[in-house]
Image 1 (cartoon, helix red, strand yellow):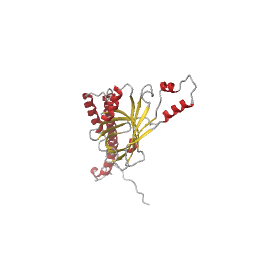
Image 2 (image 1 turned 90 degrees about the vertical axis):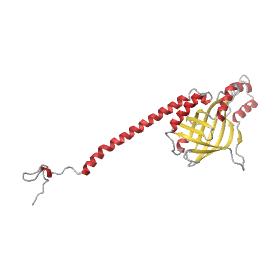
Image 3 (image 1 turned 30 degrees about the vertical axis):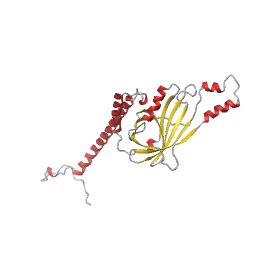
Image 4 (image 1 turned 45 degrees about the horizontal axis):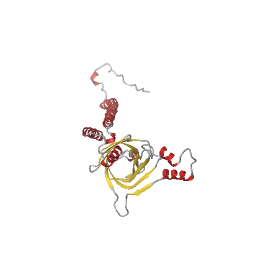
Amino acid sequence: MDLAFVPPLYPPKGNRAISEVKPFSSAVHRNLYSQRTFPCLATAATQTSQSSEFVLENKKHDLLRAIQETKRGLGATADQRSSIEEALVSVEGYNMGLPIDLVKLDGTWRLQYTSAPDVLILFEAAARLPFFQVGQIFQKFECRDQSNGGVIRNVVRWSIPTLLEEQEGATLLVSAKFDIVSARNIYLQFEEITIQNINVSEELQALIAPAILPRSFLSLQILQFIRAFRAQIPVRNPGRQSVGGLYYLSYLDNNMLLGRAVGGGGVFVFTRAQPLE
C-alpha cells in the first residue's frame, strides 16, 4: 500500500531549483493586511470621535461662560451679545442639518439666556418694579411618543413679594401645539394661558388667619381658594387661525437646546432641567 507524505519545505537533492518553491499567495497577503489594518482604522475612528466630542464640550462650556454675567440676557452689552452669537454659531455647526430627535427634545429645559424682546420685557419689569419678581423660566416639551410634533408649555415662575412666596409665588403657563415643518423648524400654535400654583407668603397667611387665634372656617376657605386658584385664558378663537410662530431648533443634545425665533424674534439657550410636577 502506497503512503502519501507531505513534501518537505526544502527542495530534494537533484536538479529542482530553489526558485521553484512557491511564495505565500496574494490572498494570504491581503488577509494579513486586513487583520492588521482594520483594528488600526477602528482605533483611529474612535480617537477622532472622542476628540470631536471633547472639542464640542469645550465650545458648549465657552457658550455657557459667555452668558454667565448677563442676567439671562437683560444685562448683556453689545460686546457680550457679539461674543455670545459667535459662541452660538460655533456650537450650532455640530448639529446642522440633522433632523429633530423628538425623544431627546422631550422633557424640561431651563432658560439660561435669551435676546427675545417678549421675554426680556418680563426681566425688565422685574428689575424696575419692586412688587414684581420673575423666577425660573422653563420650556417643557411633550413629544416622546409622537412622530411629527407634540405639545410645548412655556412655564414662568413669578411672584409678588410679601404676598406670595419668593420667586415661585405663582406660575404662568403658556401652552401651544407644535408641528415639525422641516428638518429643524417647528411651527407653534398657541392654545391657552393659565395662572396657577399660587403659593401664599407666610405674611399673608398670618394676615388672613393669625396663628395666635383659632382659624375659622372662613379663613381656611380663603386660603384654600387662593391655593387652588386657576385662571385659564384661551388664545385660540373658534373659526380663526390661532396665534403662532416659527421656531428653529438650531442645536439639540442630551443636555443643551439652542433655538431661534424665526423673523428676528431672538435666540434662546436652554439646559436640561429636572422634570416639573
